[in-house]
Length: 426
Image 1 (cartoon, rainbow, N blue to C red):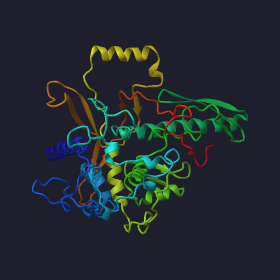
Image 2 (cartoon, helix red, strand yellow; image 1 turned 120 degrees about the horizontal axis):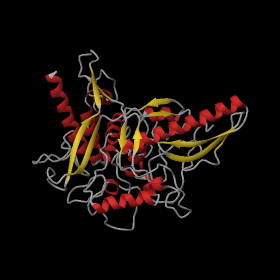
Image 3 (spheres, rainbow, N blue to C red; image 1 turned 90 degrees about the vertical axis):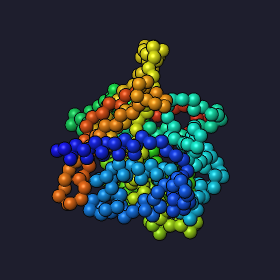
Image 4 (tube, rainbow, N blue to C red; image 1 turned 135 degrees about the horizontal axis):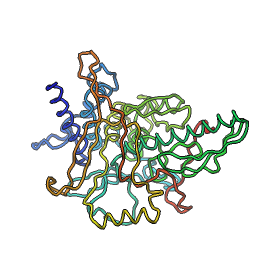
């Protein structure tokens, strides 16, 4: 028991440092640029790919590392986020070489890492978040922060399941009673309008609000255009860096199959339209740069696992003015849409980092972080390290202040509404 306790504390420390360390932008690895200081990523890209996707019994594979050493996978994903890819590794060209109708093809405007992780400190870029003076120019709209990305994905997926369960109940009751029925669409205290079902199985979605008629909540991008972190990653690699990922999981889901990603996210191509990766096999060279299999599936696995477990935003010093502002938001009805706290029923993360203001222990900016493990260990008798599985308990996402609904900002909005629909919206 003592050994197990020591191992758990060591794993907790490893996960804390893997998740919460700042991300230095655009680093090379030491095999490309050896230097006396040893500054950079210590593994080559080939070493990060390791044994490929593999399985639970293949050391060095993404499946093995995620299941048996999750902190290592998170570190690897963080290093991929940092990596300065080279032309010989397939870097570039960007989508349409950055030329064309940006209103029709938003990916044309995608930049490199600096546009998503602004260089807010000398020599350092970090995924954007709250706190500090970060406004640098008013003439662009940069990407939202990455804090709590996995929490957003889980909330959206659970809300989708709730709304679709209501739709299924409406259809079943209409058929049973042989009369039309209408039910309110409500999940986690958020109203999404109403749905009407008929005895013949037809569904009227005219009263649905804030979500597509397929009832799929898409939490990513300003217009709510993407369902999963994995789809976001594969698209960003191509749009921002001209790197085509080879991902059999997304390819299968796009073809109509039901798949489960390494983070436990279910993508069912029979009910949802899943974004098809540009490269469908390792032999493809769609940008004609002479490099194939630019981002193998193992790298997508580690990047997804890293971003899924990325820590949530911290809470800075709470003052009487802060309390007054929160109370005012409730009084005038803001929190009807900007919901402060939402509950995840089945948390698939392996750790949580709580960051709060603490003038006593914090040594830099007043913020102090505490890591908590959200996993259990299982000895599968294979002789390999134990399997680390998420606890799958409930989790309260505090200070969320959102409703995950799409709001119509009018025809001059900088992002067009997604046209994605399910394969079977009934």
